[in-house]
Amino acid sequence: MDYMLWNGRIVPKGEVRVDPEDRGYQFGDGVYEVIRVYHGNLFAEAEHFTRLERSLKELRIPFPYSLEKLSRQVNELVRLEKLEDGIIYLQVTRGTAPRAHAFPQEAEANVIAYASPYPRPVDTIVNGGSAILAEDIRWLRCDIKSINLLGNVLAKQAAKEAGALEAILHRGKTVTEGSSSNLFMVKEGKLFTHPLNSLILNGITRQVVVKLAHQLKIPLVEETFTIDQLFAADELFITSTTNEITPILTVDGKKIGHGVPGVISRQLQEAFERRIALLKA
Ligand code: PMP
Image 1 (cartoon, rainbow, N blue to C red):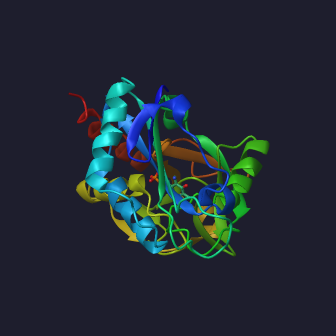
Image 2 (cartoon, protein in one colour):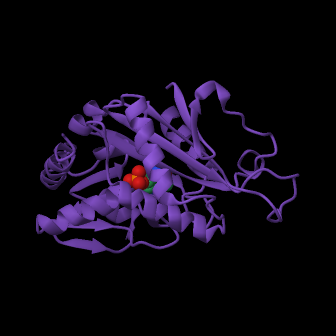
């Protein structure tokens, strides 16, 4: 990574300076996006920008220039870095101001973005992974893609220490989503996932999977389900920008279904591959 987008300009990485009084640094007062790049092109760019705009609006952070310009610059970064398969990290904080909790009177949002290589996790996509259950201790606005990620960080660390790929979060008996992914289960040919509300992130990969399920005529039920239902599922998979569609074969060491990637998971993965292939020049 040689370049960064920093407050409206693309500069050599070494020129970027984060002020200790950046509100992102002191309060976690900001939002972010992670956008996938396949074959040198942004995947689902419009959806990411729509979500970014919404997160900013919910937190009342004015974006300092046009999102069209931001989009041009992000695409320029991909070209400059000659990135084929990778990710864009994009972060917007409320700005730099003397430390006080309430919004500063005069502060302009700080914008940072960079593009870096990120190989597709082929092994877990093909062979699946394991998960643990963890209590969802996050705040009640998980729909905002905020840079406050401690609840997610602690859950992911618990998964890592258990040798698992992901932590599946639950509020009481209800399963919500993964620590950095959305969650789907298959039962008797139907696909189930948590409805869109303030308890989960409106994942871009989730949006794509919802569309693909519709095209493939796989019935989709956007309703909450419980831990007991999860353990009785035929198939389970997580979705995210970096992990795409990853089958989950065990949870807390217990097999889900036959303990192998399921038929519907595979069908959706194949359709997802076709979407990616569309980005080839
Ligand atoms: N939920 C949470 C909590 C996440 O952190 C992520 C990934 N950022 C997702 C869901 C999946 O979202 P996306 O498909 O947009 O990467």
